Length: 288
Image (cartoon, rainbow, N blue to C red; front, side):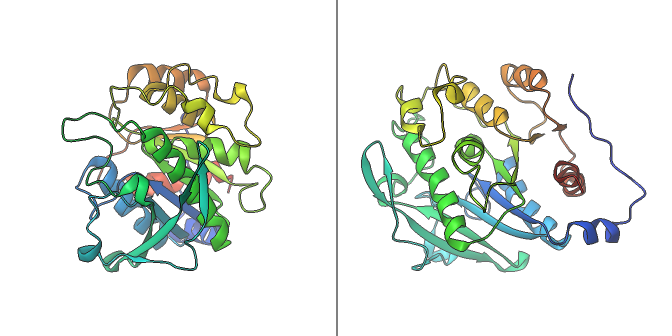
């Protein structure tokens, strides 16, 4: 049975802000407008952080620096003090480059994870024929590790991490299994939003092996019997503390898995007033 959360409707907005104003929320999304074209996910990932910040929380926001992101128009620039680390993916070193841009109207910054091997091509997930890139598995791993290592460099402790899109599905696993005893992430709650952002192909068959890091046991990735959209999303659900339905409908198999998991769920919200519902949901997940 899906868990439905009931909130105190008598608490004023000011009281809610007072209770939450010290909490930090880390947003990680595979797409944010205006850097990528408008979509359901890109719009939520643009306006939700702003709305939560306006309600008194401190926020940070990350996305991949896909080649479609126009650096000159959006005034991206490299953050030298955060760049320079190498991440080893499948026994190969890949330099981590961090860039940042500001959305002036929202008074918020967006950090971009970049690497010449993975993010220079003028596309996001597929080629001109709609075929997924063969290294999408490594790109997602690099992005996940790049975000978490950058947050560590910032020495910024998130109380809650909110992941958007399948490209972020590895992050809940790493937070719960690899960084569970890290002072920055030891008490962090993880929420993932599920969307209709699936892909039809499968990732590289060695995806599970590439995922492995100290702290991850083989049984932790058993859910990925097939490295496809459904099973990767199930892995994200398994390692999250709560789930939000970002699309009105989601894949039926993922929905059945979600119901069976017993995780707290926030049902799909009307686009005109979802921010308040998300804010209340965060409260409940954090136990405040």
